[in-house]
Length: 178
Image (cartoon, rainbow, N blue to C red):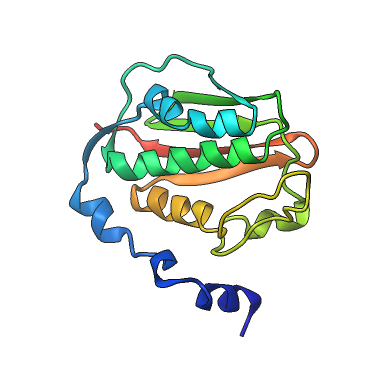
């Protein structure tokens, strides 16, 4: 049994990872990317970790074909991770921009970054980079894996750029609704 499997088998059933495919497609319609609302809903993370969420662009109404609830889940995960791994008294920058026939949503922090040897594992289940710094990062290491699944079910891509010691930018792109 691998350490990941052992960790997963010890989780209570309420932490089981559900198959989200049916819910994404059952509620699929036009979804508006509403970043100001997502930022407001996640202010508790900003306050808890002493960071400030800053919307870097004032997007017009950007509509994608998708499940708004699940896309909000992705944005919430990216915002909460950025807050958790940022240095206090820094900003988490959120940007949304059209990119050809897609929209790109990016969340940038100025935290410790992701170690290079961890880059290829970042979207795996039950995986977290070393959380031994000044504040323990809580969670089971599922958020990015679930976010990746949600974005891919919306025919999008999710990825990141990170420089150890300087911070990370997680972003996703989704097709605009035609």
